[in-house]
Length: 98
Image (cartoon, rainbow, N blue to C red; front, side, top):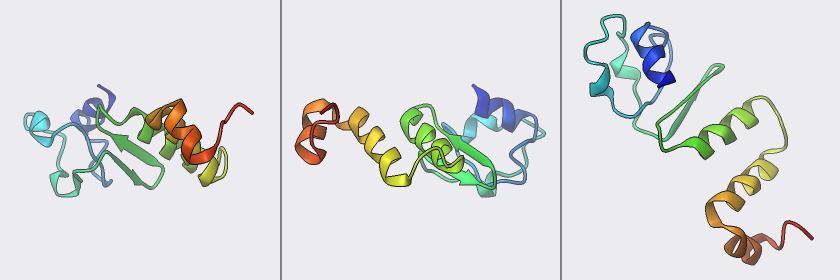
């Protein structure tokens, strides 16, 4: 896991961050920043976005927002299409393919 690599090598020591669970990093001697571990799906700090393993869509959305890929509303609608599914999305926002 990439976030574990960052923790193991001390690369999270100057950032707020998240991950699957902090106890997995107890043996990582280079990791010294447990006080800035935040129990959230996704955490953005400076130019770093971290997420736990169940937050693929939220992670992607935060990266797209960070790089100004599109306006925030459009990014959130794209994520909603994936999380709600086509029919619930269409009820809420209209058919995205028309």
